[in-house]
Length: 571
Image: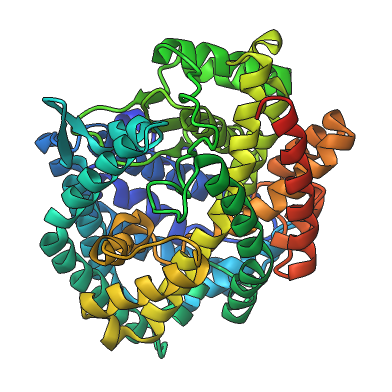
């Protein structure tokens, strides 16, 4: 099939030019002798389409006000992806009907069978509409700004003030941010009801009783169940919530407070118990890049070279600015075998963590790039996040300036303490997000009422943050679900972070004994892509895929011990 889709000779935004490639694949003979070449041609076509879509999506996130970029993305969503998905389904059915089982293809075949089982043509326009709603969410969030001392700032640029040593400043920033979120409540309520209705209909179309069951199979969660997720939530409540309460007790005493308010204890932003100013990791984004490059090279020279390639080829968009979508991500451009990192840097240590995190995702793209089929690169998200979260910890020994990093030895200890503190505080918040979504999609009629969502979010927040005082700010707390983009744009994609953090903590435990060996295992696991089941990927990295309180408790104990050591070093 050497005539198949020369990428520079076709317009990837024109289905009539793409269609012949899919037709040729559909008509081609498929046998033991031809299977390898046929899969390679399918991969090439899939990569061309994926990269075109990824680049269209990136263009809308780097500038949510770019009308032309939005038009291009919507054209792709409406006119390219639906026929591509239908044609791709025919290829899946062709391979499955052939009875062929290529070597090393057990996991992809399992995935393909699940995808073929739940595919419905009538869901394609719903998926298109869902993507467009996601773009609207980005537009709403990207336009959110507040006036701070006479300057109009995007909300991420309030983060340094949310971490200010002065409590009144933190409270002022927190209330401004929350008030701005509440202004968009009506618009987001409208989006939410549309998202929920679409998802309920997709599940019904595919023959499922509820969206959770449909989404579970769509996410190819073969290695754990909703009951396992709930067991993990319970383990967090049993093991992590008491650990965070211990942190908060000390935090209150050092701050001289009787109670903690949300602006005193934040799962996303570290607030120093000793009232010290924020540590400053860099003065500009160029310095953030260069110091990160040094750190990555210390972790592993090959990984450092990967990051230098990204810098050289303009594959980083790091600073926060008005009109930029919220959050951070790494996407892949598979034809050129390159990743792209997007984030909103504002001058905090959290930016360093974010770049290390997204760097881990980027290294996954590089390390798995030579796998023969795109099906082998379908990495389960629970392990994709191990790649990112483990990198944050594997890089931690090199944060000090004498290692080429960002900080004095004392501030490096602070940064490492801050990271472990954030890990502990994240698990309860993750449990809130995950438990909320389990409720939403098994109680869809109730969840169609935003007020019911408010009530459930508030109940879960109190359950997993029992010592944070929310009296008088109940509406702001109840609105927290509207601030989590995953709930709107990527349903059920959040427990991945919690499970991956458990895996990353085990890799960190290994690295404390043998850093070189832990990094080598990490890289070997990344190179497997999606060719092995989830427990096997964890095992390859030196970790156990688990949900239980004992595994979690052992790691929490190690983290608390390490934090005590870091306190003595200046943390």
